[in-house]
Image (cartoon, rainbow, N blue to C red):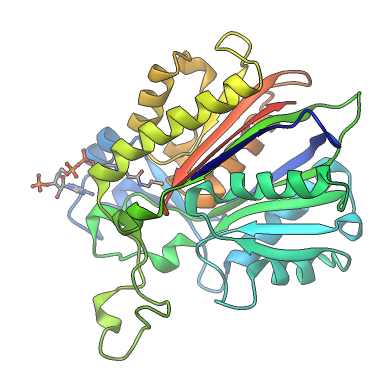
Length: 336
Ligand code: COA
């Protein structure tokens, strides 16, 4: 199932600021060589990843999310008390309930904000962007804080070389607000889901279907499990289709797009998408060599880095595109 919109009616929605936060500890591919049977050469050639950040033991997803959110509020010049909506996209919540967004609301002192989580794996930040932009453009909300935050290291099987080399921790955030004739705006969005493929990428244990018990705890079922090759093919196809959809709905083409910011899972996936969209590599933002796959945080961190590095300016068109467990996919075209 997928849904798309061109936001030409109602109130325009613009991005007022971005932020991100990466935990201090860096784990390199060399470090992983002493944990599982792998090599820097294998990880680099198959994925493009060189290192990832790992949260400290006492640092939770809401801590990462709060730091990224503060950074985004500063960048937007908006006070936490003026935020009326907080959506945290995560698959690694602090607790099953309440939502991680509730902790973030409290940490920020954003007392006026409605707060809830969105669970759409690596597409989560773009799902949050779609939900927030609809709630603002309908006129009910004014300033939304959307955050992608993950502590994937807490849900990683550190003895499984197929998965543990791929993921990292981090958070990214953006402040969405009502736009005007003088600001940029979200031009088009597309989000989609295919639940028939839920088993190829999941965390099988720890939920109601398979609660953690004393008997199964050592099977590490509350960890990411994946059929890598299947995911690879579906990711390329879904992100290509989703990006094409928003590019067409926004009336853009390869020449009028300044930058594409794809989900940061694998450099080979990113190269394949750029190729199929006929977008030159220099117009495609990549930072996965530093952070690995941070799931819902990946596009958010990349958006903030590209923004702060001046990769796009006011008036430029950018396209964000993601893919993740579910399966889920999403794309957003923005005039900055
Ligand atoms: N170090 C060394 N060898 C490894 C390894 C590691 N970390 N992980 C797997 N291998 C081995 C496998 O055991 C396999 O060995 P075998 O041939 O003896 O069985 C071999 O490397 C090749 O495995 P394969 O699965 O064919 O590799 P690949 O080229 O498909 O790359 C992924 C594996 C996971 C990097 C790739 O499939 C991928 O990136 N998939 C998408 C993952 C993703 O993006 N997920 C998140 C989506 S949001």
